[in-house]
Image (cartoon, rainbow, N blue to C red):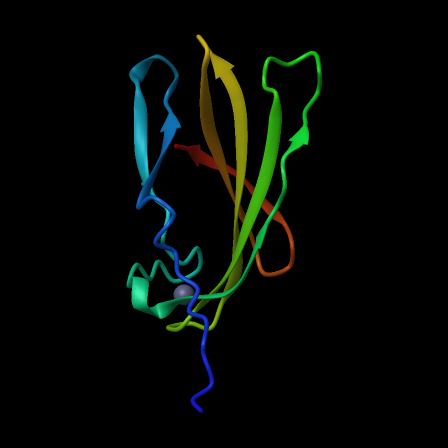
Length: 120
Ligand SMILES: [Zn+2]
């Protein structure tokens, strides 16, 4: 029997995230890109592992009701750099409907948070 290989992919992530530019609207930024060599070839950005977080209550002073963090460990097939895309999904009620805003962070190979990239 053939061993079943679970293929992880970045399909569930959008191609771009949006970073606010103050009063000048938003700037779309490519999400699926190696932070070191700029490789954008999806087939070469391998998802090594992914972790899906369960929802947790956020700070009660904030309107957001709960937050779940998903992390995707990526290895660039071109330059062999490893990085993590961290998605912080913030769930909140908006006029009776649930709304999700996802804040995306890039974590470097040595664990540094490069900062908030944008959201979608
Ligand atoms: Zn690379």
